[in-house]
Length: 243
Image (tube, rainbow, N blue to C red; front, side):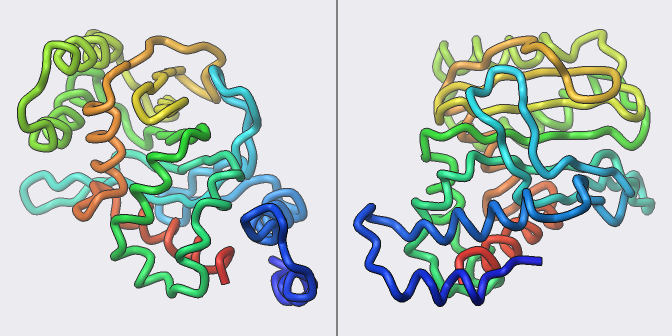
């Protein structure tokens, strides 16, 4: 439970000289660290996500901000393909004071908030957990299908980044339980890590193209996200933290 009421009362008594409200981070920390259950279960897939994680290539521990799932339609049947959770450096919250007091619905419809999260230099990572067997090529093709329309005129650097990204998944089986990390260490650099089960321990490749990394973030958190449940979960959590 977030102890937001008491924390906010204390915050109102003091004028913050830091330029931001530290309670946003404090409330979030209480939620992440103070909860007895170390995991959060994504309800539709029963996949469990740790509340905080140390990931390869990251300089600090990241905290879970929301979870959801990706569903793919085959003919008339919808099949769940993977669960996903977004982890962020808690400092990102200090840049979101503009949205203080907004409802979850307002947050979800405001693309500028999600753009602010992406543009923040602090690390953030999307953890994808497969809930069915998928070969690497099929996974990449689906991802490329979503990324390509968002790249209007790919530059040579963009094409190199896409080739690097694609190479990670070619001829690679992704069985149920496989974990993929897409970690933005900056807006223009994304680390990709893959394991057959459990959190990856190493970085498989670095994708260095602001256009590609931005397009991928938009795939999940733009106006037409591939996982509406993930974006909705983030909006609900942010609305609670930014009250």
